[in-house]
Length: 236
Ligand code: DC
Image (cartoon, rainbow, N blue to C red; front, side, top):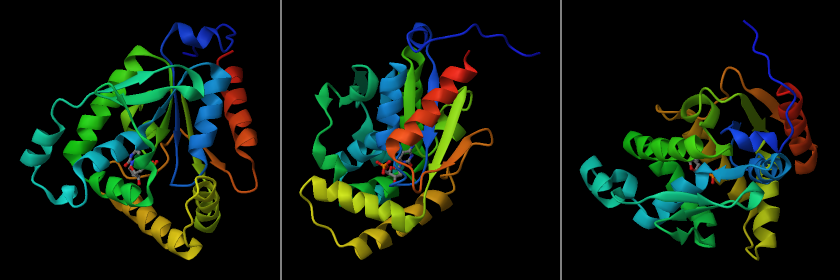
């Protein structure tokens, strides 16, 4: 039976937890878009990749080779909270804000390796679902629509060619004052794509009911506009 939803505004979206998922490969523009969508809808932005990065930074290189027992012990008692609304919502780990160090290229690779470990994914999935149960979210990541929030009402998957994504990443790093070799970034990105798409648990792939958006040639503002418009229109 078709559900009837009275017309809603972005303000009304705050009244019951609502999850909009935005998945896609590294450099697909989803972070900028997710922040804009969160601002547009007036709900919190959840950067699930930052959670993998924070764990990876905390545990360090090669942690993905440790036994489950050691990993579980090292991750016990670590708790994420989300403070603020819109694109400025920020994650805290045991009360400490996640620092800029998690954005290092190397930490991204560690996170991708750690993300292959089922137990780590399970811990983070539960943390993400807990956050989504209490507050409306734009959840950004790789498996937000397919695994973590399968019942989310609005699911989007952003994509673009690897060269285009690497170029964006290069510009982003340059703005942060970091000079990286573009070819090395393309190679890293392809490697991370392969790893993220081919892991056995929760691989990067669009949920069956996700709207796929090719972001090549579109500004983040344009992509964000498409997403916000669709959510507001369909919830009306
Ligand atoms: O989105 P990002 O580049 O900050 O994510 C870093 C890594 O974390 C990514 O290569 C794979 C992993 N990740 C994941 O497996 N699942 C998510 N929902 C988010 C990130």
